[in-house]
Structures are given as structure tokens and as C-alpha cells.
Amino acid sequence: MAADARPGFARRVWDADLTYSFRNSPVAILSALVTAVLILGSLFAPWVAPHNPFDLSTISLIDAGDPPQWIEGGSPDFPLGTDEQGRDILSAILFGARISLGVGLFSTLFALALGVTAGLIAGWRGGMIDAFIMRVADVQLSFPAILVALLIDGIVRSTLPHDEQDKIAMFVLIGSIGLSGWVQFARLVRGSTLVERNKEYVQAARVIGVHPIRIVVTHVLPNVLTPVLVVATIYFAFAIITEATLSFLGVGVPPTEPSLGTLIQVGNGYLFSGEWWITVFPAVTLAALVLSVNLLGDWVRDALNPRLQ
Figure 1 (cartoon, rainbow, N blue to C red):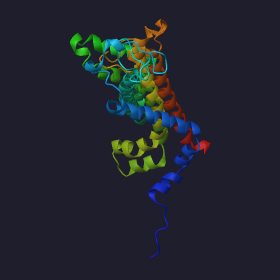
Figure 2: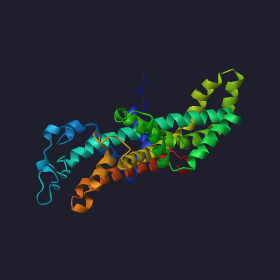
Figure 3: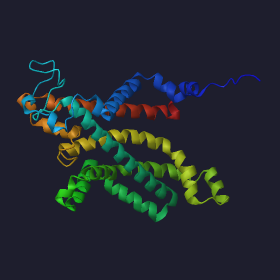
Figure 4: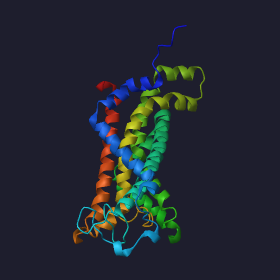
């Protein structure tokens, strides 16, 4: 019997159009490397960080305000310097990025699930249900997303006892950011669903008696996911920025679990006193993370657009 001449799985992946597009895009490669370094650094922060910024036994006020290592007075123990409490800036960035990435990821998944569900229902059912969902979306679009997130966060916090707020602050933050961004997914999915529901394969499934829910889940949903994934990539970066903004304003995660936004807010008060590294390095990390994710989202959009092939 002749040997199987079909290429292996790894070879097929390497020769795929998406992989070819990635290999020939220096911006996508660089963005992926920056994103991977930041994500891996935050995930393995307990092992790669020089210090644990949350372990009070390792923090000394004697080291407070030390400059970066390459500036006179700096120490190799603190490569990026220390803050006003003596915490290592590099370690605080690695641990803070974990919170920023976690909030960004779960708020994106929440907005994605809510928006896709609402868009499928509106596009499939039509009529009054479609009109109601879209009018709610139009009203929400008339307000800035950060204002919606602030409003939701404030309402939830005002209904909770003060001693319970810090315990669920992370969940409140994820919910408020997710609720402020579901509209983008809903409008996109609704438009795609309106197109897909009138195609022949959907009509054929209806004729043979397939349940509408099964049609939507197994036939319509897979055909509307490609543009949704592109928007989700870009919204992930937006969610990280929103979390940082809320934390900078003091309504994000509690100070005991500082994110990149909290670190920037803390260091902002020392910016003009000469201790610029406290806020500059977290801000640069946040900007690099958001920029790399946005560039990856742009590449995914172009790579999946058949008109550009």
C-alpha cells in the first residue's frame, strides 16, 4: 500500500492562510510577542517576580522611594525602583497585570455572552422583541461606556454593606464593564442573524422540522461568530483600559489587590516630586498591553476579511 501523502497536522497548520498571514506580518508577530510576554509574566508572577508586593514581611520602609537600578541610589534588588511603601515596582506590575488581564478577560466574556444572546434573539424573533432590545441598546449608546460602568458600579455598591464591598469588588467591576459593552456585540450579531435567517439552509432546516433553538445554536451562531471574535479582541483592550480608568478614579479593585490602574493612581501623587518611576512604568506597561492587543485585533480583522485575500 502506498504511503499516505497527505501532510501532517503541523504542516497543514503552518501552510494555512491564517498562519501565512501571521508569518508575513511583522506588526502581528511583534504584538503577539509583547502580549505573550506580559500575559506569561503575569500568570507566573509568583515565580518570576523578584518580590511579593503583598507579603508585608518582605516590605521595608527603609527601601521606600528607591529609584530604578540604573539611576544613582538604585539597587539591583529593585530593578524598576520602589514605591512610597517600599514595594518593588516590577513585582507590583507583574501582580497588578494579573488583575487587569483577569478583569478584562472575564468582562469581555460576559459582554460577549450577553450581547450574542441578545443579538440572536433580536435578529431571529424580530418584531416587538427586536425593537425593544435595539431601543435599549440605542439608549445605552447615547452614554459613554465609562459613564455606564460608573453608574452600574455605584448602584451596586450603594446597595451593599460597606464591609461587603471589597469582597465582591472584582465581580462588581467585571459586571459593570461587561454590561457597558454588550451593545456592540448585540448589534453586530443581530445584523448577521437577519441575513442568515433568510438563507436556504435555514429554510431547509425549518421545513424538516428542526427546533428553532437548535437552528440558531447549530447553524446560525457558527456563521456569525467570525466578526464577533474580531470585536471581542478589540473589546478586550477596551475592557483593560476601562478597568484601569475605574481603578484610577478609586472605584475599581480594592487597594489591597492593586491593578495597573491602581498603581498609576498611587504613583500619580508622586509624579512631580521626582519619583516618576512609580507611575511611569505601570503606565508604560498598560499602554504596551493595550496597544499590542489592539494591533492583534486589527490583524485578525484583516486576516479574516475575504475581501482582502
